[in-house]
Amino acid sequence: MFVIGERINGMFKDIGDAILAKDPQPVRAMAEKQLAAGADALDINVGTRVPKPERGAAMEWLVDSVREVTTVPLSIDSPSLVIVRAGLAKACAKGRGIINSTTGQQGKVEEFMKLAHEFSAGIVGLSIDEKGVAATADAKLEIGMRIIAAAAEAGVPTEDVYLDPIILPVNCNQSAPGIVMETISQFKMLSDPAPHIVIGLSNLSQGASERSLINRTFLVMAIGAGLDASIHDPLDEELTNAMVTAELLLNKSIYSDSYLAAYRKGKSVR
Amino acid sequence: MTLMETAKEKWSGAVGTVVLGADAAAGGTRKSVVTLGGASTLPFLKFDGQTPHRPAVAMEVWDSAPEDWPAPLATALGDLVKSPVEWARTCVEKFGADLICLRLTSTHPDLANTSPQKAAETVKAVLKAISVPLIVWGCDQPDKDNQVLPVCSQAAAGERCLFGTVTEDNYKTLAVSCLADGHCLIGLSPIDINIAKQVNVLVTEMGFPLDRLVMYQTTGALGYGLEYTYSIQERGRLAALGGDRLMAVPVICMVGQEAWRTREARATEEELPGWGSEKERGLNWEIATAAALLQAGSDILVLRHPAAVAAIKTSIGQLMS
Image (cartoon, rainbow over all chains, first blue to last red; front, side, top):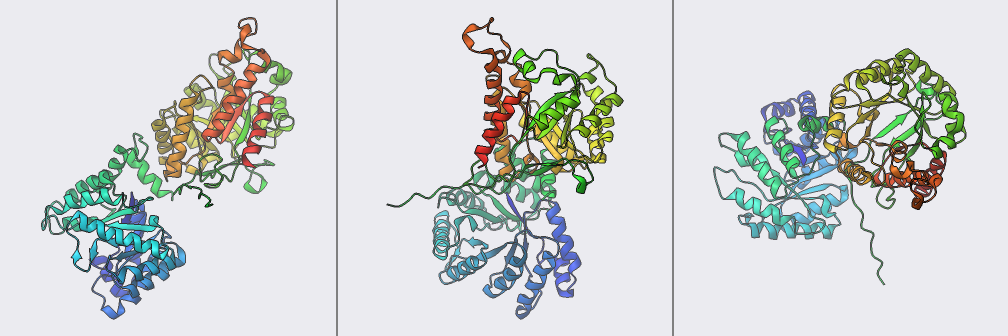
């Protein structure tokens, strides 16, 4: 599993405060904590407390702050092409970048793919089009196909594409998780090589009780369906343990009696 | 006509690199060092990735003359076996060994029960006689090894030797010594990939660096479990290439030890006249076993017969060219 740590996000109070105060220390500390907990990449999102015109500069500052402590891929999280470009330029100066994200909307997806190609970056493609979030597996697949075609057109390798079927809060729509599961297994068959499949896991439990339990239960189910990347909180130890165990049971990693320690040890010697 | 594109794997990981031996710049006295691992592909698939360091060939040297080695092997080594120092020196200077595997067999309580101090003197004498890195292997009796090997480790401090072995049940004593004295370690597991990984986890949990570990997953000779060793090494390599850092550890195989105890290597022509020349049989068994394990991804092959060393070094040269 390719774990993208979600905690460097201005929506969290500690990071939001740090962005406003231009204090890099909490940002660096959060980057290091997530990496120690097993994150393979870090999501970078300036949040909404920064006024819109200043968000590009805030993204640059945030990426620079993280790049001081790591060269792992950084997922530049913004719907704005301008802000993504600003973050990507900083991120790719010392490592890789991932665009998070484009939708399948015509006009938009082509522009973002050009950017991905320019920076040899990964790119997350959401199951959203002109009509909004696709509600059925068929609609999600259609958008997925469109995103893969746009990638091929722009010269972005399929291995750099991360299709996101979009998971909605379970307390809003209880049929959505099942549809996402169905979509994941079908996404894998869209092309050879297959695209990566990613979800923004925490959205599933927004506003619900037992958030951690809901998140880890679904993550295990989704891994079984073929999910190979996730944007989530790697500091949730039980979530990480469940994820590592699921991969073990699917024979994606080699068992040892201390397999949980082995996962963390393996990440610590990167 | 359209040429077909070569299908290449895209691996996310690589085998870790381990350096054996310390030269003057690194605080030791070796004239040459051996770098293991680093491969970013399955063995010798040049089109898929890099194999930056060639597999190394070590030769076994015992601290006391072996008594039951078959005649063709004993004859090839002659009187050398009476002196570990001369044996080691000749293996390097005449037979072309990349490194020496000194086996402290005489320290076994059921044999000469040699003292730790005397064993350490042998280690120092052999180190002085050779310019290449040294593997120091105990007698495989855990309690005695825990007495002998730390003393040998201290005597060879700074030479970055490869000490063996540690197991799932017995690793702390030797790991602490090797950590303090700057040596590398061999983790032993009984043809069991899960235990191999567990040994690596346990040792690294003590703070032992992963880039000083080598795995010995035990070796099966041709006809005697080779396929198990092969498939475990292959699975380990695939895990390493897939990004499992705890399995991205170079592998050592005790080829000579296993090949020369097979019936095919030991039986005389009188006993089995239909099996062909006794002189060639054991040698060929050792070469065939080593050649197969090279393809499995072994990083150090420990051999016994000088002619096997020559044949395998030629084979490695061809595979790497």
